[in-house]
Amino acid sequence: MGAFSGLISLLTLISLAIIDIGDKPPAFIEGTQWIKGKAPAFEKSLTIVELWRSSCSNCRDQIPHLTALQKAYGDRVAIVALNSEPIDLLNQYMKEHGDELSYSVGHISKEIMSRFIEGTPGVPYCYIIDKKGSVVWKGHPSSIEDVLDNILNGSIDAEKMKKIAALEKTLNEAFDANNAAAIEQGVKDILAIDPGNVLALETLINVAKYKKEQGLLKEAFSKAPMSGLAAKNADALATMLILDDDPAYRYPEIAKKFAEHALSREPENSEYIKTYARVLSYLGDRDKAIKSSPGNKTRKEN
Image (cartoon, rainbow, N blue to C red; front, side, top):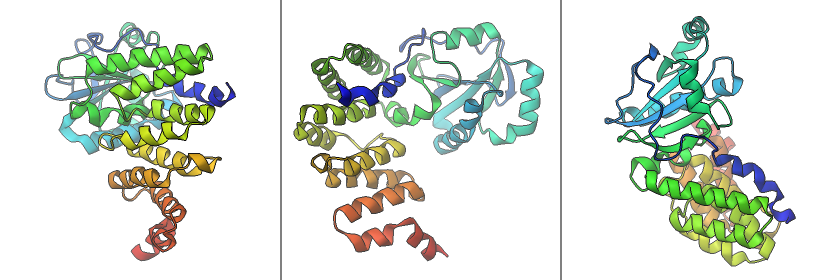
């Protein structure tokens, strides 16, 4: 089962939080002291609740990401960051860094914080709450983009996310048991509901290599929808599809679709430009690859 040993870390995406998909979050609005911005109106927009501490470096690292998300999605999304540190400490942090956050910040009690993070890996941690006031997703803030567009466009809702979460739990159990057949079936079950599920697609690469069945890859990746796929995930998948150690598992034509999608979402991202150039070079279009390279684009702009 050596082929699967590197995948255990991927399963940290599976949450152990006590608050489940479909549940109502703890009632936090009453009693919250808003340091910046205001309380969300669940019925008006999708709400992202982040639990954080100013003393947590990983939490601070997410501030630019959440700020960019709030600016990109505007009034379709309301981001609120909740903190239970001593109020003086939070006030001082916001006085020094408040301009870096483009979203609301509230101070909550330690009791409410405990209810939010019970059973989770700890802060930073996020919940996405739909317009009905129910949790539709939960996880690390860096993974929000994996599902945000699909939730906004209605292709994924709380019911579907609950099914996916249950299947991911089953997949985790299959990993614990080193059961190759169950891992393969788990991946197929997830992709049947969510063809663009990044965890399942990444796992499938290892399943295909373990079974030496290249066809598993081509079929699944060809069906993966671009719509709703986060740019960083599209870029990661494109990279995997051209850089595999075994050429038999490289699919540059499919990689090109993912690379183009990543660039369509973030056309100025130098890493995505580099991936696209690498794909084009692999396909033999060296002239276009050179023109697409980050260095060449910079020279043109200058």
